Image 1: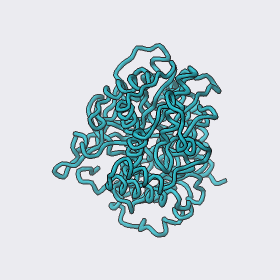
Image 2: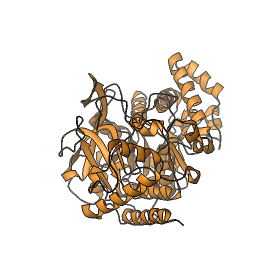
Image 3: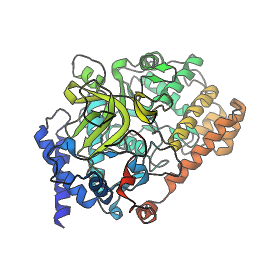
Image 4: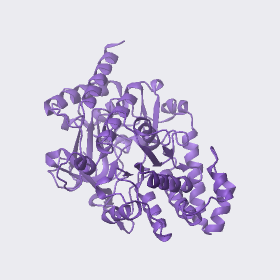
Length: 491
């Protein structure tokens, strides 16, 4: 093993130890700084794209003494370049990125075995601490996941993460409820009624917009559930405080009205493909631990740092002031330490927590401090592929809820019995027939087909294609080409 590999392996083991110490551990800034500078040196040496980016800025290891001064890479770079600090032939995991509006920009983020251990370890710790803070070791519950499984979407970070959550916290009867024909409404309704009847709590995890569509459909059918105490719901995706015409408080009211889950047991998670650690709000954790409740915020774990950066000069802002959120994450060993996003947000509690308010928009050639009202955030990302998939998901909820029968009151019909058979998935012709019967909406059908075709194309592409993609990309362009093309983001 070379000295470089030995250093990288040691850093991985030490960061894993920091993660395993838990979210309440304290990592002094001087220690975080030491790790950051050492990781900066390793990534500068091993990551060609990052090295060219740093050289263009005139910053090298040894030039800086603070983690705040290590160059921040725009998340846009991940859409156009392979950003890896290890040989790509060692890749064991690849996730699609979000945030691009072009179907031809199919960015992926790669991780080797060490990187996979870090991202899985970080998010097991975060999920256990904030979504299941009342679980003892080996405690499990049934998890209903309104997201695709890794089998359906092997390159989708949300699917990979949900499978890890199912393995660590879910019982054997936990379900992925998003398939090729959309949300499996029949089994969702059945599982909710089973929990209600048995008194055994469940956990629901999925995209915020999918819940809103489901709740609105339940309202139209006068259908409610009384899930047992201890049930919880986790919605994924950033927000500006509104989901269409539904405010965040309206969302909590709908969760209580339809599922009988209190606001204290509603958790929101923010995940960025470009950084390893997901950030959860702490309302449920504070409730379980008997701490006083406060305005929802996302605590930043010991192995990470988050700053809101001034949109004009990318200097750090004080607590409460809105800027572009930048993440420094020691679990990013296989990529780059620091990523600055187009998420607008602010820090709180002396910089130990943060919140997001929306995505940045461009006005008069500059980044605006006001969120872009035309770019809603979703758990599936903001790329065209995921927006179409989310459109199809929400459309399928609306359609299937119109056809659904409440398991509490109805005997399953022949069609429901066929759909409930193990391994049964509605074929595309069946889906088309149901759409034509339920709602003659050609635009929705077009979006659905485009979403499925594009998603299948990207998910089925073999990993070897991406491992050799570097040869086909013009990675030797002038370093200035690595900068975001969005105006107003110099620095």
